[in-house]
Length: 256
Length: 216
Image (cartoon, rainbow over all chains, first blue to last red; front, side, top):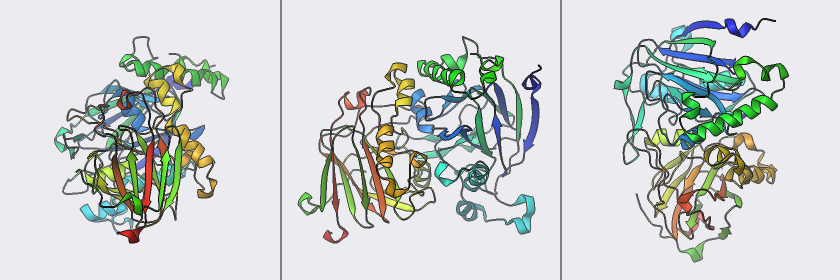
């Protein structure tokens, strides 16, 4: 029996201001590329078998004593498991505390461009993008959580004041996520909510899906902190005994 | 910013002590004030708010900190819901800084943070879940448990992107006071965490007091 996942290789470009969603299996590498510099990718994770299990930004930050996200970090669910690990990152600082643009914020900052008048160049917002994509899986406003904002650096000063650092953007910056469990991914390419660009930014993002290399014993993310070793142990237990498809548990990509 | 309240405790219409490890859920009317007192010092009051008229619209940490452009909560902070509605405003704060990035402790995250075999230790998320199971009248449950406020916790963010769990800046008798902007439900877990040096591994009681709008 051949495993179709071994031949997984898919590539697409999402224009700025759009949204998408997909289920991603454990063992898949999702790579995002900020083609022009200045892109933002909003992202949320859910367990497709129990969507009450979600990406949890506070747990992710406090388990790793970090405010920014970069290579070596693991992205945790509220159940102490790891949806995915950041195995590659040439950008260096990603936000997960600022949430999304709203329809109202877009109108105030850049003026709203309606679909009727502007067609595919209408000004979509991240909040509604998540509602639309989540709704396709029975999720709604009750299921929203603090999301990731890939390629957006937001720093906090000593007094806690937030600063969006537009100068940090790099054309060609890449981040690679290795999925450690089967995950429903909601994503959008709407601007970061603190982006003060003069015009509504429309930055394309390349998305590629491929087979990840198996997690080695000396894996950087698994070993970057003792907490992550325990997070991997929780995730492995779930994969080995909590999975409804016994064939999946013995899949080579799920070995760790 | 540190500020104090002019309200006298003898004019409060409600007063309750919340032991560590317990929850408290209560409806607060628009204009009423809620004071949470850190009785013995550096105790975490893990707090959530819901719009009473529409409990699916609940406190949103990310919307709150983004709109005020600051990660810390203190006097003047408006606590926003997912829909951008102001639920309450902090009107007095003798501590000066409260956390809303660290979330609540959970048995599951305890296994990651401390030890895999600590999965059975009591945690705020269990208190939250029980609170909503025992108060079905609001029609909300685990699905509606979002990122909370940790009153009296000091979780400094460093300019280079670190996050620290520092010694508390609160102390015995310190308090925070909120005014409800609309009718709200407040849900507090008095944190039972035994693994955190922030509370000197010693969870202690909280007091809550409510004043009607017309006493002011």
